[in-house]
Image (cartoon, rainbow, N blue to C red; front, side, top):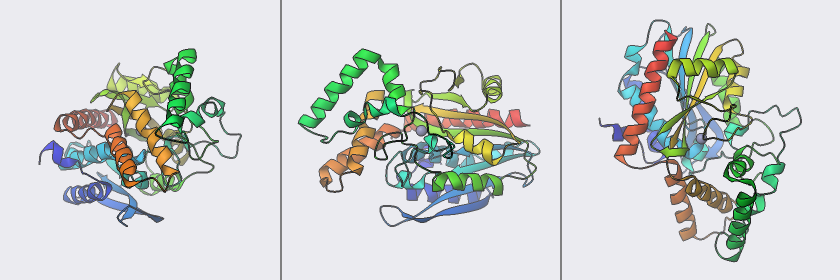
Length: 359
Ligand SMILES: [Zn+2]
């Protein structure tokens, strides 16, 4: 099987490839079906888990895909590759390998970054019993980011207003205001929701059910796309300061700390590592997101804006819908053999090194 064949063309194909590879590897499997949502062809949606190594593993490498739906093309392909290339045959004693496929299966199937509630899972892990993070930066931009018209005069006015904002505040401040996470606009970008989503609750559940009570050390690789130079995977350390320092020791100096402002990603709130630590508080967790570049940041943002516009326009014509969905897929997945080889190679490298560190 060539590397390109690890990668599927849609969610259903990706899920099938993952299950087939997991069975071939002799993995234990678990499936968490979505209680109500379906894919565009009526297909069932689920979060699937493959577990290898000892059931009572004290040290585990956890690999997540599809936190951001459409980014799952990359993450799923890499997970299938780890199984097909039999990474588990290199597991040190006491070390387990757990692959979580399509944390946001609805977004994967429907070509969206957000989930069935319009929520960005990587902004959803805030404490909803407390006052929510400030959304005023995003509020100033929302009407322009998701304009009334995607073509014509409304769009032109929106572009002019955004250009003014960037001139006044700079690109980095614009990125932070747009993508830092907001809790006021359910139809907007990077929306964190009003409560924990099904995916967030299911992740907490599977972390308790699929990882042994004896678990003491956890390395997480969370596979993302859409930021940075094409084909390069920036390792972004998330979570505690101690975890970030450990990630740098393990993987080297190109690890960037999210909280430290070194990363291509803006500092964000309510991220998945919060959920991991809540579910398994006594475990030493080393959490790294691998962020693979796809297209220039302007093209990725345009694709996201178009998709959010489309989501509030059920009457949009077929041509507009097809063009926006095509742009969205291209924003999060570069469908070429060279890109697939690059992202898989980087992921396999990090996974292998994580196992050696967990030994
Ligand atoms: Zn992502």
